[in-house]
Length: 167
Image 1 (spheres, rainbow, N blue to C red):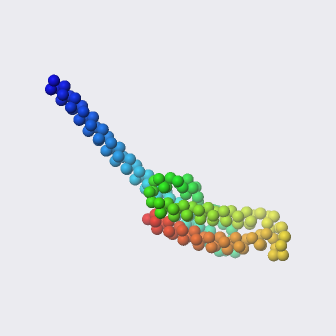
Image 2: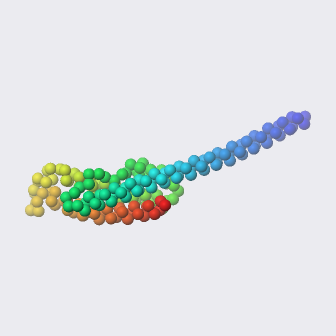
C-alpha cells in the first residue's frame, strides 16, 4: 500500500515539476526568441535608414548640379514590408511613429524623383510649347527641382531623428 502511495505521489510530483519546468523553459525560450527578433528587426531598419541617408545625400548632390537628374531612387522595400510588424516587435511606439514618418517622407520624395525622371526623359515635354514661357519642361522642371531641394532637407532631418532613436 505504501509503495502504491509513494508511486502515485512520485508520479504526481514528477508531473507537477515537469510541467512547471517545461513552462519555465518555454517562457525563457520565448523571451530569448523575442529579444533576438527585436534586435534583428532593429538592425535591419537601422541599415535601411543608413542606406537611405546615403541615397538622399547623393540625390542632393545630383539635384544641386544644373540640369542633372538622379536616375536612382530611395530604398523602400524593407520599410514597407515591416510597416505593421515593427509595432508588434519593437514595442517603442514613438520610434515606430518616427519610422513611419520617415517612410512617408521617402515615398513622397520617391514620387517627386519619378516625376523629374518622367519630365526629363519625355520628349514631348520638351517639344510641346503651349505657353509664352516655353515648353512644359521649362515651366515644370525649375519648381520641381526646388521642391526636391527643400524636401531633401526635410528628409535629412527626419533621418537624423530616426538614427538618434535607433541608437
